[in-house]
Image (cartoon, rainbow, N blue to C red; front, side, top):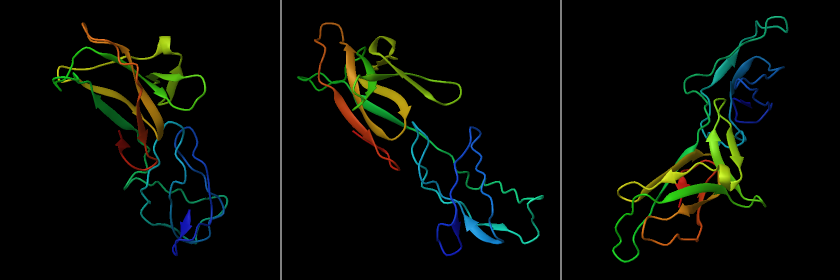
Length: 178
């Protein structure tokens, strides 16, 4: 939480419902800004619209502020790559890829997004497969900030599997860069 001069005066942590409890704010005008995103999300650079704590609130009747315009939501970035024939430069359909985190020691592969929004990572044999379409385009999962790799799991018929990993990075507050 920052005061009307932009000075940080309080910090808090969101709960499982995305709610943040900040106690002891004096009457005044404030903004809320995210400092760090939850795991597997990208930090939201949006600063809330100013909100005011009136002087008629007490410990028994605290001020409840709902910040919805704009909502401070976290998001993920989808990534794409294209599988091309090296000689003709045309897209190749049907190649299978997995996505893995880079720098985790034992490789951790994207398995699924769970109903609660968390992502399950696991061994290669559990990895979700992403197929190249008719133009060779492969769309991976929506991910949070970090460095990842596309790994070709199965080649297109009559082609050899490319064993080179394709690295990409999703910045903390920006789009993915392949």
